[in-house]
Image (cartoon, rainbow, N blue to C red; front, side):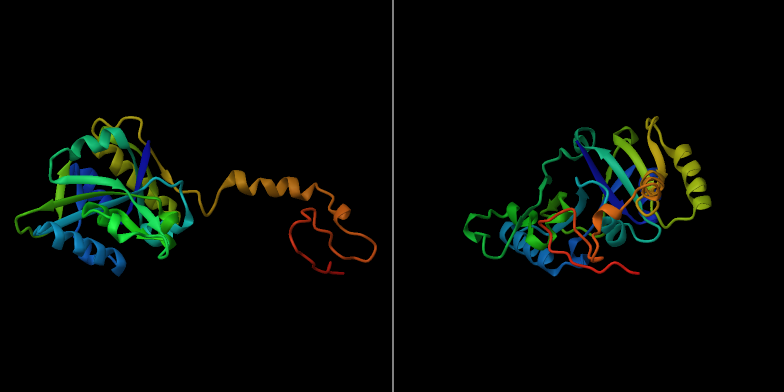
Length: 233
């Protein structure tokens, strides 16, 4: 199984150079619903500190880049089985986030840890996997966990990163990767994909007259859709 982490470029450089994964304080998250549920976990379990890192098991999407990858973002894909071996201490716990409509959630069935993996239905497309760390002692700053590069499958640069910069970054990452031979490093093609644009070559050769009749009204080849447009003259 593969899981992805979208992150700013600076965070990716720190992770690769220092062989460490960074878990952050959820207090800084923009989703106040999430913060509320995790705060309740802290209260119920009487812990002093919580840190978290979020991944997705979804295929690459424009949404993930625009929200989490930013203009200079990086997406790192991990081999789940290899990566999770570095989070075996008892202070770590992890799981796949469950998504619920307001009308379907049953608070009485949620245990304290479940609160850390429960989100509103509106977030379901994120397909999130989350690693949590909690401590009974006060703790400042991020929680760093050392890992090995052999659990990285690929590294993608933001589709908005200039090609020349991508080349330089690729050279830097290749020099820093240890035990990560075979890691695919490339720029995302989500906003410019050659194979997708090649479809237009076939469109140029197609005859669309069969879609129209003498009254110049468009005949939808998919009759279940309610579509009615006029053909421009």
